[in-house]
Structures are given as structure tokens and as C-alpha cells.
Length: 446
Ligand SMILES: Cc1ncc(COP(=O)(O)O)c(C=O)c1O
Image (cartoon, rainbow, N blue to C red):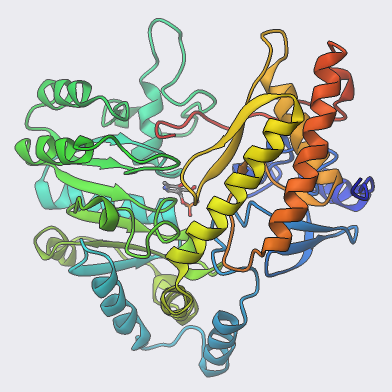
């Protein structure tokens, strides 16, 4: 039996204080306590190293969230951090431009198949907004047809004015477009992943008005053969720019992005998150033809020239290659999958560990009378008590070890045992010490 962690008092106190002065508690919705076992999962950390972090109460956890995927080499990676500290000593933001900005652009052009020209930002949503602006400016058209999550900006959130007349639900359940200009209603239009006929219908209905088709090429599963090729052909038939948002799926599965192994090259690609191992950085890359008109557009921000994110990204990309990341992520993910599947099979519950090796999650086939949010929250709660921070999913880093996998599997075995005991007693809810966790919004790409 793992040692149980009960005391997250200081985390809970910080969260309470945050609620009084920070609207919405956190800066990223996925960091809210309601995304985990509220009151039992830790919410504030004091330090992190490698595959572990220590919360403000002094408890140590194996981290399978890794800043929602932004940490790829491991927390406080010594090589990246040394490069960053060295840069800090030479100045983080010059009056002039830093040469590293050119060096990183050249590295991205060598690494990402769709890259011939490069622009920078500090985050993923911001980079998506830049991509939307370039697509609109380059084509002279306004509408964007999309499939995926692309951040908080107006161009994208405007999609949620398209209320479903049947259900009254917004395209992204859980997001009301409060504060987004009504005038943008109808300019961002979602399509369902895998449904080429729907996309074709939308492009025909908005003939001559669509600037771009933007999508996440994959998240936790690979697309059906020919699907992305079909999307690209439809986008080009309608003179729309074809954009991949690789903010989440880029880097782990393949250092050049999903486009590399899938062999489908978009006109433009958005990257961020894991590219810089925890330092703010984002980029829009694309063909010369699509990107060059950006030189005449007003796309400009003071901190996009900072040397920290660029140095961190350059070092992270080189380290991924040097550490043979693609092979290691496959090995790590497949080892985790196989041990978790053994544990699930032995638990007496039915379910499986599914998904790409870089995006694994546990899904349980629960009896009809067992509520899924409650069972999932119970899982997260029991894992937290055993020093493992996760949702139902597991996103590793190159710092995760076979020992981390073994300890995680032990915790999963015990957590599933608790769920099984609840199911057998016909009462999972009474084992729950927090409110059921809530998904912030529905995603279009699984
Ligand atoms: C596919 C995708 N695009 C864009 C974003 C937004 O990135 P950021 O949170 O850095 O603004 C995310 C964040 O989760 C994402 O997963």
C-alpha cells in the first residue's frame, strides 16, 4: 500500500486567497482545482525537478500533467536552464534584435516540413491569432473554418455565437462568448474531425469567403488514411490556406510535428508549448508565398523579441534530437501502456489504456448506474493521495523513468481497487471527498 497524502492545507489556503483577488482563480482554465479532485489534489507547487514536483505543503508527486504538455524534457532541465541563465547574464531583451531569433528561425525551417518563413509570439493562442490574421491578410477573405481548440482570442471564440438550435448548446459546451464582439458572429465556423462531407458542405455554403481551414491534425489518435489529404485538397480547391495547429500534438510524437510522419504538409503551422520546455514561446511558420505578405500587416509586439524564449526553444529542439526523443517517448509510452493494461485487467474492472504513446489515457467501461465524472474524480483523488498528479491522461517527459512508471502502476492498481469497492457497494459517490471534476469545454479533436 502506498503512503497516503492527506494534507494539502496550504494549497487550499492559496486557492481560497486567489479566488478573492484573481477572477477565475487561475490564468489557465486547465489549472483550476475543478479540473482535478478539488480540495484533495494539490493546486500550488513550490518546486519541480525532472518528472516530479513538490507542492506548497511539502508533498512530492510524480507529474503526468507537465504544465499541460509544455514540459517535454523534464522540469528545470539543466541544459535548457543553463542556456537560459547564460542568456540572462547577457541580457534578456535587447534594444536591438538578438541573432538567436534568426538561428531559431533557421532551426525551425530545417525541422518543420511546412516552414520556409517564421514569425514568433509568446504563446499558442496568440500564435493562432497571428496565423488567422496572416491568412485573412494574404487571401483578402474573412471567414475561418476550423477543427480543434485554438485559444482564447476573439477570432476563435466568436464560433460560440453559433448556438445549436436543437440543444441550445454552444459549439464548445461550457464556453459562452461573453465579451466577444457580436459583429464577429459567423466568421469562425467549426467542422467535425473526420467528416469530409461536412467540411465540403461548409466550404460550398461560404464559397469565396473562407480565408483558412485551421485544424489540429491529431491529438490522441492518428487520422484515418487519406483524411488530412482530403482536407488539404478541399481547402485548396476553395483557395483557403491550410493551417495545422500543432501546439499540443507537435514535438513529442515527432520533432518536426505530426505533419512529418503523416506526410501531409500544410501551408502554415502553429507551434508553441513543448517547443521551449517551460519558457514562453510560440511561432507561426509557413510557405514563403503565404507568410511573405505578413511583412505588410500590423503584427507586432515588444516581448516577441525576447531572447529567453528563443534560446530556450533552440536548446530544447536540439536536446530533443540529441536525446533521441522520438524513440524514448515510444519506449516510455508503450511501457506505461502495457503495465497499465495489466493493472486494469487485474483490477476486476473493464477498461483500457488507449491513445498514441505520447497521449495515453485510461478509460473505464463502468456499469450504467456508475456516474463517469464521479468515478474519474475518485481516480484522480486516489492517485493524488498516493503522490501521482494526473487526470485520466498521462503526458510524460524525457525525465520520466521506469521507476516512475512502476510507482504510477502501483498507485493505479490501488485507485482502481477503491473504485471497484465503490461499484461493488453500489455507491462510488460516498468515497469521493471532492466535487466531481468538470471538463472546461468540449474538444473537437480527441
Ligand atoms: C491545439 C492548441 N492550440 C492552441 C492552444 C492555446 O495555447 P496557449 O494556452 O499557449 O495560448 C492550446 C492550448 O492548450 C492548444 O492545445
